[in-house]
Amino acid sequence: MAANKRNRITELGLINCFSRAFKTSNPFIVKGIGDDAAVIRIGKGKHLLSTCDMLIEGRHFKKTDDLSGVGYKAMSSSLSDIAAMAGEPRFALLSLGIPARLKPKDIDRLLKGIKKAARMFSVDIIGGDTNASDKLTIDICMLGFVEPKKLVSRSGAKAGDYIFVTGKLGGSIYGRHLKFMPRVKEAKFLADNFRINSMIDISDGLALDLWRILKESNVGAVIFENLIPRHRDSRSLEESLNMGEDFELLFTIAEDAGEILLGKIRNKRISFPLSFIGKIIKDKPGIYLVNRKNKLSKIEPKGFLHF
Image 1 (cartoon, rainbow, N blue to C red):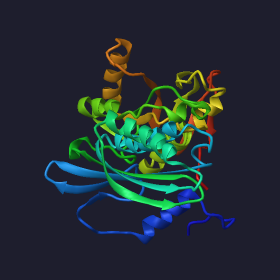
Image 2 (image 1 turned 180 degrees about the horizontal axis):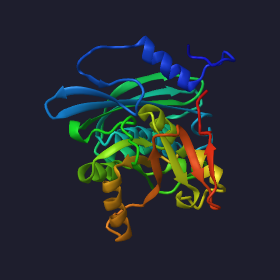
Image 3 (image 1 turned 90 degrees about the horizontal axis):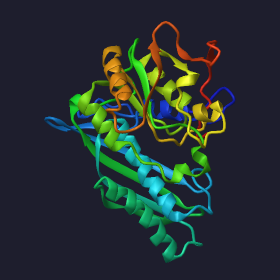
Image 4 (image 1 turned 135 degrees about the vertical axis):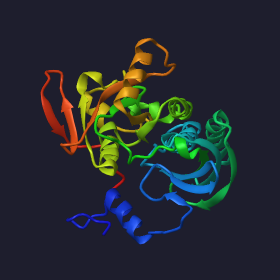
């Protein structure tokens, strides 16, 4: 079933429905539905990563938003999915649903933003599709590669792991969501130098995306309010926990490696913003927040859901 008890379609219900409907025993598939990207075995020492990300006018951007920024976001969202698997993005397929109101100069503006993000990471756009649509719709399929030993998924978090996050969180919807930097280089650095147990990009909110790691890994987490890196645009703790569209990396790493990483942060040997925010626990499922008064409480993930 793709619906909840009230007979409404839900995002989680759809994913579960798809997973059951499209089960496969194909030996080339390392990971299918349910992560940031599908993983396909294509040869010795190399896996293919594949992900699609759809942006729809009125849902992911405003009709009045600058089209260059919209195009940049569309490409960068898919780049971020590849980063979450510690991969290297290489090729993209672009499909557009184009409303009648748009003029050739508008499409040029849209493509300018798409090309800007693609060029940053040497991604070639190699095909796609176009159609008429009532609303501007952009769907990008991104393909990339990853070494098997460096592949990271959502399902590897272990009790005792330290939880880290890149960048600062919250308030992205006030404009930053059209100009964020995908953390492709940061993910490569982490995978090259550490064994990352689990990782996800924060597209739907810190709490909700952490919950997704916990669900796939069958563990719980404790995070600390005073350690959550709040962006200056964030107007509240609630926004930093749940607003989404930060497109930062959220990952877990074994305690001993976590201590090494903390030492590098203290000694300013990490060239990008990185924060320790909590630990993975085994005995209590769900997310527990320690507030500034040192009080522990369970929190519900209230991030962005499409249904």
